[in-house]
Image (cartoon, rainbow over all chains, first blue to last red):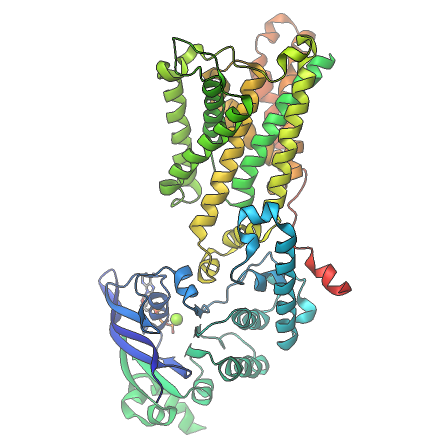
Length: 262
Length: 315
Ligand SMILES: Nc1ncnc2c1ncn2[C@@H]1O[C@H](COP(=O)(O)OP(=O)(O)OP(=O)(O)O)[C@@H](O)[C@H]1O
Ligand SMILES: [Mg+2]
C-alpha cells in the first residue's frame, strides 16, 4: 500500500447551524482512483470546496502531500498541484477552445505587465509553445477542429472533454472530479471515462471522483469512500462496498433493488 | 478658428486618455468606477504642486521639471488607487461604484477645502507650460497638441499591448469565470488591482497633461459631471471594451460638448443663457440614440486576441 497523498482530518462545515460536512476524516492513496459516493446532499461537493480552499472549514484540517493546505486560497492550492473540476462544467464562454486551455498554463511571462510591454518577442514564443501543446491535447481528445470556436458553442459533453483537456495542460499531482459523467450522453461517457483513466495511467495523477453512476464508479475506482450526512460512512474496494448491507441500506438502497430486478 | 479646433483636439485627447483608463477598468476588468475623476484630479494637482512656482498660499513651489511632474502625477494616482483597492476591490458591481463615488466626493472636498495644500476654490495658477517660451503664445496650442497626441498615443499603445497579452487574457478569464480562474492558479485580486492601478495612473497622467496645458487648475474642472459622467458617456457611446471605440467616443462627445458653444451665437440671447441645459440635452440625445440603435456602442468589442493560431498553420 502506498502512502496517502490527501488527508482530511475532522473536517466540519456548518451552513446556518446545519452541518453539511460533519467531522469528516478520510485519506486518498497516492496514485489511486478513489471514488466518493453518497446520497444527494451528503456533502460531497462541500467537501471538495473545503479541500480546494473555496470554503473555510469551521474545524478540521486538510493535508496534501504532507503539507497543511487548510487555510490556502484556491490559487495557492493549485500551486501545490491540486486541481478540481466542478459539478457544473466551467469554462470561458467567450474565449476560443484554444484560449480556454492556454489560460491555465503556469509561469506565463506575458502575465506580467512589464513583459507584456517590453518583451513581447519572448512572450510570443512562449505563447506559441503553449498553443502547440494545447493543439496536441485537443488532437488527442478529438476536439482539434473546434479549437477556434468560442467555448459557448460546445455541447455539454464537449465541455466536459474540455475540462479534461485542461487537466492535461499542466503538471498536476491530484485532481478532484465532481461528477464528470453527469449530463453526458452514454456514447460520450465511455470516452470521457477512458480519458479519465488515462490521466491516472499515463500521467500518474491521483484521482478523487464524485459520481452517481454506479457502473462507472465500480468500474474505474480501486477504492470507494461512502459519505453519508457529512461523514465518512465506510470505505473499501468496490466489491466490499457493493456487498456491504449497511451501504445498500444507506445509499444504494433503491439502486440495489433495481439491480436485482434486472 | 484653427486655434479653436486645436484646443478642442487637445481637450479631446485628454478626455480620450480618461476614456481609455475607464475602458480598462469597466470594459476589460468589469470595475464600475464612478469615481474616475478623483484620479484625474489627483494627477492634475500633483503635477501642479510639483512643478508650480512657490506661493505663500499653498503647498508647492517645487518647480520640478514638467516630465517629473507628469511622472509624479501618475505615481500619486497609482498609489492612491493601490490603497483604495485594498478595501474597494473586495466589492463588486454596484457597491464598488458607490464606494468610488464616495471617494471622488471625499477627494473633491479635500481639494476644495484644504487651502494650505491646494489653495482651495481659488486654485493654483502659473503652472509652467512646456516649451512655452519657444513660440508665439498664439500658436502655443499647436505645440501642446503634439504633446497631447503623443501622450494619447503612448496610452493607447500601452493599453492595447496590455489587453492583448496573456495578462489581458487573465483579466478576461476573471470576468468570464472567476471561480475557474482562481482554481487555475491565478491570483485574481492581484490582477484586478494591477489593472486598477495602471489605469488610474493613466487618469493621473491625463490630469497632468491638462494642468500643463491650461497653466491653471481649480476644483470646478473636476466636478463629477465633467470628470466622471462625461467620461462614462464617452465609453458607452464609443463602445465598451474597444480602445479605438472609446477614443472615437471621446472626440465625438467632447465635440458636441464644445460645439454647443456655437449654438449660442445662433439663438436668441434669452436661450443662450441656458447653454448648460442645451449641452445636457444634446448629450442626452446622443446617449439615447446610441443606446437605442447601437447598444454596444459605435465600435463593438473585439473578441479574440491571440494571433498565434494562424501562424501555427503556416509553421
Ligand atoms: N453555500 C451553501 N449555503 C448553504 N447551504 C449549503 C451550501 N452549500 C451546500 N449547502 C448544503 O449542504 C448540504 C450538502 O451539499 P453538497 O452540495 O455538498 O451535497 P452533495 O453531496 O454534493 O450533493 P449532490 O450529490 O446533490 O451534488 C446540502 O444540504 C446543501 O443544501
Ligand atoms: Mg455535489
